[in-house]
Amino acid sequence: MKDDKIDILLAEMIGRKDGMTVPDGYFSDFAARMDSMLPDRVTENHPAVRTRWQMIRPYAYLAAMFAGIWCMLQMFHMIGGGAHGIMSPDTNPILAEAISDDTFMDDYYCMDVDELDFIDDLYASGLDVTNL
Image (cartoon, rainbow, N blue to C red; front, top):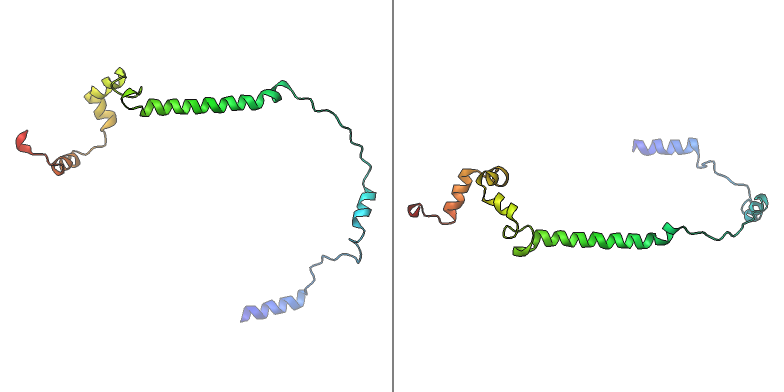
């Protein structure tokens, strides 16, 4: 209620004019006056000279795109190629040696496994201790 009274008093003091007034008929011949004020401009048509790079650039970009797609597909083939991929221990002796090394597996692959969680998982999967 109090804010409404303040708003009304401020509107009466300031008024509704924002100061943006234009003389009457100002925009009626605005385009003609602006055209007469601008200097004459002479445009010359120069043939565009294309450099060798500007001519082959689209083809170079296209070749780079296809090379990127080929590299991406090769990576997919290497990583997920199943038993025939490069990242398979059957075909990669370095990977097979790393997997067979217990210290490597403990240090880099199984470093965050809690022993109690591991034993609980074995019991949950049906491990019978009497058969060990």
